[in-house]
Length: 284
Image (tube, rainbow, N blue to C red):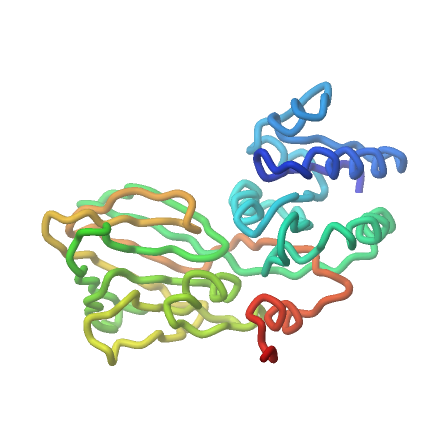
């Protein structure tokens, strides 16, 4: 390992000093450290880089922030085999597992090359309109189709591997990876899927028919959703961060991506400990 990139949550009061501490420690070991533009400017780094320039130039990335910041960086990394260390600047995250107090020890492990990587599935989503590709997205967590605040329920004609599943009449539909199962999917009543399980989950949002329940399918499945609605506002969102408006008749296709996100795991916390902490399991 020769080069490390650092991203940070915008305008976080602690990010600057932590970034400086990381840079100084790594440079003391003759490693090159580069940062995205806004962070570099804040700490007086001579040169910064555009966010999408960093992944192709580094061997490892450190993200300072929360899960949302890491998810955004994961999309920037795309199909590059660059491991990501998430350092949480607030409460423990599902993805940003390392706390500030654990960071010094973790840096020493990185310097020695003694870290474990968890390979996480990503999803590819394609929006088709009138037979043409309108947009393509690669996500770590989920893709969501949902209605605007005042819109009526949406009819979502859903198939799995070209076999008709059902017409979901609901406020929306979530297709989540195992990593994304603890996000919007969980809030909508979907199951938690262990990261190593090769599956996807389809979860309706506030379905009109109460017997419409979440369904888990193989990670090899190709899911297609044709949306039908009147003149209401319906959105497609990728990882809750980017997206676009849909039109009646648009077709959304979701499948497992060939890209993987490589997350550096905490040496002191396993997945179930993170679940217990985040979800307050076992507390009275």
